Length: 395
Image (tube, rainbow, N blue to C red; front, side, top):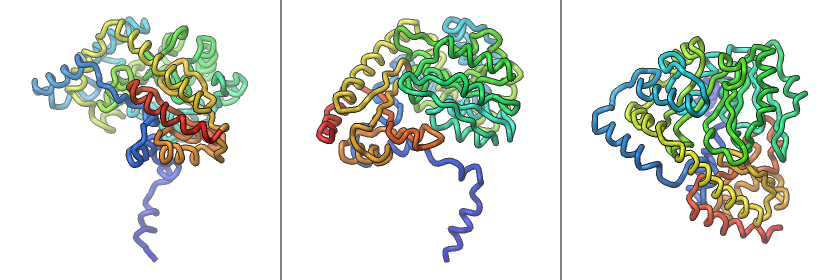
């Protein structure tokens, strides 16, 4: 008997046993292994803007290489406040309402650890970005899931109301939504806000795709709604808007009391985000509004290119209104489940996607769905489109 293995398992926490490694990152490794086009993990394969790359280099050369203030360099926090003012119309105190984090991923877990106690409940819309459920578990909370139903990914108001109770502490809202591309309407947001006010519940809103919203839709932050500024934590990042997913520079916006708690948790999680990249981020956040219009238009073209390719290959697609993902139905191809299909696609067709079951609390709900990302160069998407044509033989 190998007692060392048994001993190792004994020392693994119950929390860590309750979730798996990231399926998205696993599919990236599979893409590398089989030389596949990676439409699984949402990172751009095109360059970040020259201005911010140059600013990062200049900051390093100028010896901005030591710790910044734990909760963020002052010039970067001031740039965040300026941008939020013109974009969302909110007046922020950069000294008391902003915490700079190591990406939005740390921002969300720091916010949850700062606000949620063991035994409390956190409402999560599903399909969900895969980090949210483990975040709730690591916080000692119980995730309570409310479904978004295709094709428009709408929630049932009765089901959402039924999820609220005296133990509910927070609701996680990803808007625009990953993985579905849904943009929540004002009517939907008002309904959610009414319940948050009624039950005194926090809204932790992931707005990392706020500028990737396609016409005629528009981004609305929960913090803009009446009575929600003090009960909302906005989680955001440079990653998607400025194509710097590897920089890991994000931020949380919250009331002073909640910000103080987030800052304490953040300090002992990571100490602080990279100082020279915060200096470059201050440049990025002051880009003119034309930058964001081009970003939206460029992604709309990529979206339409991949939608056509997927539909021609035999997928039923759900057209996204925001973000840079497409959820697709695989039932036309005759596979038993999404895992079997994803393995076939990456190994035989040489295109990587994410199995839909990884976005659901009950895997069977995503057993005939997969997610593709289109934050790629046109030639990358064209290469994927050519390979996907092989699927027509299976229909």
